[in-house]
Length: 333
Ligand code: COA
Image (cartoon, rainbow, N blue to C red; front, side, top):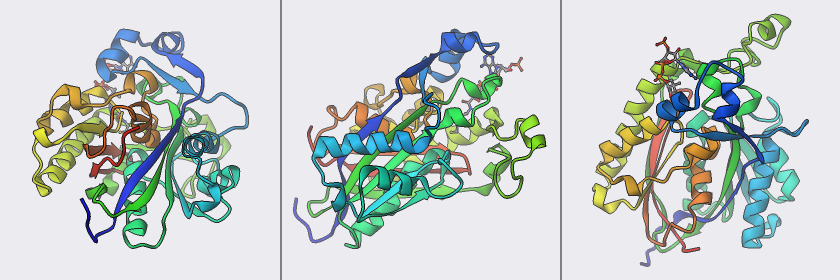
């Protein structure tokens, strides 16, 4: 395959999850729940927690990027841009991407954050693609990182069972052979604010004694409504990107779906008409790491992915945000 058009391809993957495991059995001791309920309703068995005092999301993101740099022997000075997708940034400002850039020695890069919740990684990859397709930059890192344990209320059984901490990073480079991002569909609907948000801590409700007392700096989620939206929209977006590119289930090698709930992923697979063996899944080990889920799938299953494989990346998240990317994998590892 050789063509004049420049595409944006993922050329390397890195990842990091903290050592501490919080299992369903641990949660049984903290809230009124059972391992059986959590497994049946979500598919999650355990999740990782960053419990190093004073360390936040940039710690996870830095480790993931360092892992990528180590694997590729890439000189960090060659990186043009680092995009961090996160909703649990170290601070409201500066951007967590700036801190990661500094930590890894990417002294020639500029960097910024994208906050699109669980769809963050897709938004990041799409944004990076535009810079690469236009020829503006040559080496862009997209790092999806979230320390969800910082905003989870561990006395609320509706939410605390779902989330975990982790980060995944990809290096994206221009490609002349047609590999990489082929197409994407991305959406936003601000109605989502009613159903999934962190109510306090921003400019509407700056932190106060009252907001802390009301536990408003933790995630608020109407799980049932979010589930209904997610199950419909993620499946619709996946079907749409396939239809636009005349792909059938047979043409797809793997679905890499945001790991929010196994039932949502199953519904998406069903709509796409693909076999269960084509669905990559690690939700049982990490739970929902928000921006981290899709790059962590790439990290865990890198050996399985082969040059030329047709991948569908799909996500749904707070905002609401959702979408799907059709990507042709670049390399064998
Ligand atoms: N353990 C035991 N019981 C629980 C529970 C828990 N951890 N959490 C809720 N329940 C109970 C509820 O209180 C309710 O009891 P009731 O019928 O007596 O009122 C019952 O289980 C059913 O609750 P419901 O909220 O309808 O469960 P659900 O099947 O919708 O599952 C979620 C709850 C949160 C797992 C599910 O709604 C979900 O995954 N939503 C999407 C979340 C998500 O992905 N968010 C991230 C953004 S993508």
